[in-house]
Image (tube, rainbow, N blue to C red):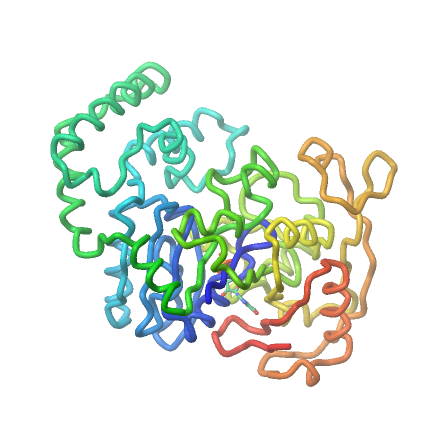
Length: 424
Ligand code: GDP
């Protein structure tokens, strides 16, 4: 059976925890898009880990972790992350990397940084991991697949061709020193050797696994609203975080996907730029940010303070719809326990009219939230393991959101640890 875990919002919904938890009954966990710009936080017996590129199954013994062809493969980031896991005492995980995965080049990271710097206050709020230049090259067909690194002639030809373009940009637009081709060829050859033990035909491996009925978990990064087509373009990422892309980026047949779990937080949080209708400011924001997540709402990748706000039913309903979610997981419910009343955004006001459909970006910029206030529960709910045992107002809150987002909430997370979960 193949399941997909994806984000219903802007990312950082708590997917890492849910994946880490479900990895326990999975044989295989696959990352299908994005790269080392992700930041999943997982907390388990080995400690607290911010995973960037590795799949969230790496801390579960026996799980095969796969980086599919849709991933942006930063080989150095991969090796560094693996080493830091091993240093934390996690038993060496089993990892396979698709030979079709495209390789992140040092110039992608460099160009990402230079462009964000050039844009100044109009920057995209990129994590500067090279993602946009990387996917640009992939679709411009000047990227390199991992398998091409093992043929010296192809590697040289492709890199020299790419460098003609990159060096023209680097010297003329950004006025920096050009990249030395020989040094880059040597570096990529060396990195290719270091990652060689993990390289595999993951398409064949996964097809066989699907045929033999293995439990496979596909793990998305970011969320619906960062999708290049359906998100808040251009404040989006450069690969699709939608479950519809999961079979492509992972390499499994579309028909094999049986469950799509959209993860959403009991309030909103967002890293990076773009319209964020329910955003809070001042003391109210500071309090929610301080109490959020497992150690405050600060980016797992960048350490940047996350923007926070109340739950947005309009955005989340759309987020679940576009994911094709068969169920939702609501995380961080425990964080709201300090509030007397909890505002929930049930509609937007756009140019004096009430709208309940998530609009295109230029209209979204003009939207203001319409709130309904729900009573809080004012008591610690961590440690509770059944839905019935939650305070009545906490149950009502969950049921209200469930009606609003039109998707069954089958899991409620009431703490950052793996076992802190209520199934319904
Ligand atoms: P991801 O990118 O979707 O995996 O999300 P992150 O891991 O970046 O952000 C989620 C944050 O919430 C992390 O700090 C998690 O440890 C934390 N977290 C996840 N679920 C819960 C929960 O139910 N309660 C609390 N308090 N923290 C949670």
